[in-house]
Length: 103
Image 1: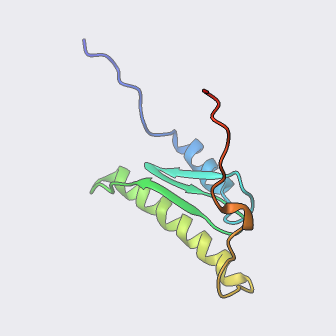
Image 2: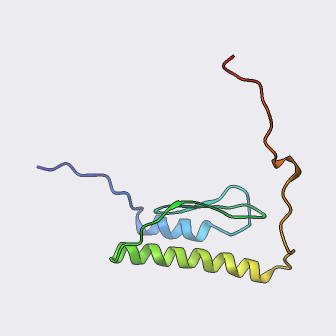
Protein backbone atom coordinates (compact mmCIF):
# COMPACT_ATOMS: atom_id res chain seq x y z
CA UNK A 1 0.00 0.00 0.00
CA UNK A 2 1.55 3.36 -1.00
CA UNK A 3 2.12 5.98 1.68
CA UNK A 4 -0.06 9.05 1.64
CA UNK A 5 1.97 12.09 0.73
CA UNK A 6 1.08 15.28 2.59
CA UNK A 7 -0.81 17.73 0.44
CA UNK A 8 1.12 20.87 -0.53
CA UNK A 9 -2.09 22.76 -1.20
CA UNK A 10 -4.01 24.51 1.54
CA UNK A 11 -7.67 23.72 2.11
CA UNK A 12 -9.90 26.00 0.05
CA UNK A 13 -11.31 27.85 3.09
CA UNK A 14 -7.81 28.51 4.47
CA UNK A 15 -6.55 29.75 1.10
CA UNK A 16 -9.55 32.08 0.75
CA UNK A 17 -9.05 33.44 4.29
CA UNK A 18 -5.37 34.11 3.53
CA UNK A 19 -6.33 35.82 0.28
CA UNK A 20 -8.69 38.19 2.07
CA UNK A 21 -6.23 38.85 4.93
CA UNK A 22 -3.63 40.40 2.60
CA UNK A 23 -4.19 44.15 2.31
CA UNK A 24 -1.54 45.70 0.03
CA UNK A 25 0.61 48.38 1.67
CA UNK A 26 -1.31 48.04 4.97
CA UNK A 27 1.57 46.78 7.12
CA UNK A 28 5.13 45.49 7.15
CA UNK A 29 4.29 41.93 8.15
CA UNK A 30 1.70 40.27 5.90
CA UNK A 31 2.78 37.75 3.30
CA UNK A 32 0.71 36.09 0.60
CA UNK A 33 2.04 32.87 -0.86
CA UNK A 34 0.86 31.47 -4.18
CA UNK A 35 2.78 28.29 -4.81
CA UNK A 36 6.42 29.20 -4.21
CA UNK A 37 5.81 32.88 -5.04
CA UNK A 38 5.66 35.22 -2.03
CA UNK A 39 4.26 38.73 -1.88
CA UNK A 40 5.85 40.42 1.14
CA UNK A 41 3.81 43.42 2.21
CA UNK A 42 5.31 46.76 3.14
CA UNK A 43 3.90 50.21 3.72
CA UNK A 44 5.87 51.67 0.80
CA UNK A 45 6.62 48.61 -1.37
CA UNK A 46 5.64 44.99 -1.93
CA UNK A 47 8.47 42.55 -2.59
CA UNK A 48 7.98 39.47 -4.77
CA UNK A 49 10.19 36.44 -4.22
CA UNK A 50 10.21 32.93 -5.62
CA UNK A 51 8.65 31.37 -8.67
CA UNK A 52 5.32 30.04 -9.78
CA UNK A 53 4.51 27.40 -12.38
CA UNK A 54 0.98 27.82 -13.65
CA UNK A 55 -0.11 24.41 -14.84
CA UNK A 56 -2.87 23.86 -17.37
CA UNK A 57 -5.28 22.25 -14.92
CA UNK A 58 -7.72 23.25 -12.15
CA UNK A 59 -4.91 23.88 -9.68
CA UNK A 60 -3.19 26.17 -12.17
CA UNK A 61 -6.43 28.03 -12.77
CA UNK A 62 -6.91 28.53 -9.03
CA UNK A 63 -3.38 29.88 -8.69
CA UNK A 64 -3.84 32.17 -11.70
CA UNK A 65 -7.00 33.57 -10.11
CA UNK A 66 -5.16 34.17 -6.82
CA UNK A 67 -2.38 35.90 -8.73
CA UNK A 68 -4.90 38.04 -10.60
CA UNK A 69 -6.78 39.03 -7.42
CA UNK A 70 -3.51 39.91 -5.69
CA UNK A 71 -2.39 42.17 -8.51
CA UNK A 72 -5.89 43.67 -8.82
CA UNK A 73 -5.80 44.56 -5.09
CA UNK A 74 -2.33 46.11 -5.44
CA UNK A 75 -3.37 48.18 -8.48
CA UNK A 76 -6.58 49.31 -6.73
CA UNK A 77 -4.61 50.66 -3.75
CA UNK A 78 -2.06 52.36 -6.02
CA UNK A 79 -4.75 53.99 -8.15
CA UNK A 80 -6.59 55.30 -5.08
CA UNK A 81 -3.61 57.16 -3.63
CA UNK A 82 -1.78 60.39 -4.37
CA UNK A 83 1.52 58.86 -5.46
CA UNK A 84 4.98 60.46 -5.48
CA UNK A 85 7.18 60.04 -8.56
CA UNK A 86 9.40 57.58 -6.65
CA UNK A 87 9.68 56.15 -3.15
CA UNK A 88 12.78 57.40 -1.40
CA UNK A 89 15.16 54.79 -0.07
CA UNK A 90 15.44 54.71 3.71
CA UNK A 91 18.66 56.39 4.90
CA UNK A 92 19.53 53.40 7.07
CA UNK A 93 19.16 50.92 4.21
CA UNK A 94 22.91 50.86 3.52
CA UNK A 95 24.72 47.72 4.72
CA UNK A 96 26.30 47.99 8.16
CA UNK A 97 29.36 46.24 9.55
CA UNK A 98 28.80 44.21 12.69
CA UNK A 99 31.15 42.33 14.97
CA UNK A 100 31.68 38.69 14.07
CA UNK A 101 29.61 36.70 16.60
CA UNK A 102 31.78 33.61 16.01
CA UNK A 103 35.13 35.27 16.78
